Each structure stands twice: as C-alpha cells, then as structure tokens.
Image 1 (cartoon, rainbow, N blue to C red):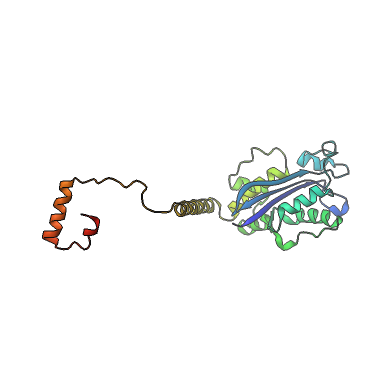
Image 2: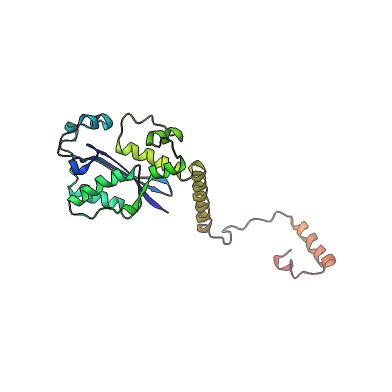
Length: 235
C-alpha cells in the first residue's frame, strides 16, 4: 500500500521571515489515494496578533488561538513529524505550506522536510488544465466535489477536499473503481486461502438407491468391462 500525507495549513500571512506564523495544521493519511481515517490536526497559538485580512480567510481570531498549543511544544511538532513519517507530502501550492512548516522546524533546530518529498497538486492541475483557474475551489467545482461543509478556509476541511481532488488528478472515479475491485479481489483470495479444503466431517448420503447402484455396477461389469476406475468408489 502506498502511504501518502495530504497537508494543509492556515497562517497569519504570507511570509514567515516577516513574522507570520502557522495557526492551523492538518495532515490526512491516504493509502493508494484513498483516506484511511487517520489524521493529525491542531490549532496553534502564533504568539502574535491576527491581521484582519487573514482572519477573513480562515475565521481564526487571536482570542480563539490564545492559549492553544505552540508549535515549539514537543507534543505538537514531534507528534506531527511522527504522523508524517517518511511518506510523500501532498499540498496545493506546496511551496507555501513547505516554507511555513520548514521555517517553524528550523527555528527549533529540527531538520526540514526536503523539497523532493512534496507533491504539488497545483503543478499537477496546471499540467492537466493549462491556462485555467486551478485553485482548490475551482478544482472542486470542476470535479463536482461538494463544498457544502466549507464556509471559510480551514486546514482540516481543505485537506479532505484536497484528498478528493488528488484522487481525481490521478485518475478519478475509474481509479477508485479499480482500487475497490482490486481490494475486493484480494479479500476474496484471502478468504479462499483461509478456508482449507478437506474431508467433510459428515459425509453426504447417497442420492441413489441400492437398486440403482447395483444396476450401475452390472453395467460397468458387462458393458464397460473395466472396474479399475469406478470399482474403487464401490459403484
């Protein structure tokens, strides 16, 4: 099974080197392009104010974030790294998310997540739909993925949407059907292997009468004249 991590972030702005920080981080585990149900999600106290334009995007106020865990807390950054493991990381406009995550890690003296591990769905979308709008919203509408749960940007809901978009970019419903069929076939094989064949604990009764069996034996002796094959079955 190919394990990958779909990741999304929310921040106070666009540039960590100008003092902007992560405020929400979500990572969703997928295997063979399908969510497993395992996820990592946390709100983060940025230890600074929240610019009004950023709050309009994600709806996270400074008051809401005050007292939330800080990224430097070991249970946050270490749990995040443990969850991600060595899996490839999928993000939309991955440079943005990678820059913020790696900045926070480097501040702590922790090795950053290398660029080659990141898969950028924006780049994938631009190759498939050149010259078109390829925002996450636009792709959801193009692939008919419901946005009904999403009132504002949020890292967890956007990661879920991105996982659905990524499936479509990699082959969509046909791939989903293929994966489902493959999984069902594998399950059937496993069940068949588990059910070892052997003698019945209760042999089935004869369906023929004794008279019918005697007639058959007579036929074999007088017509076929060879009991080597059938004789051992008592026929």
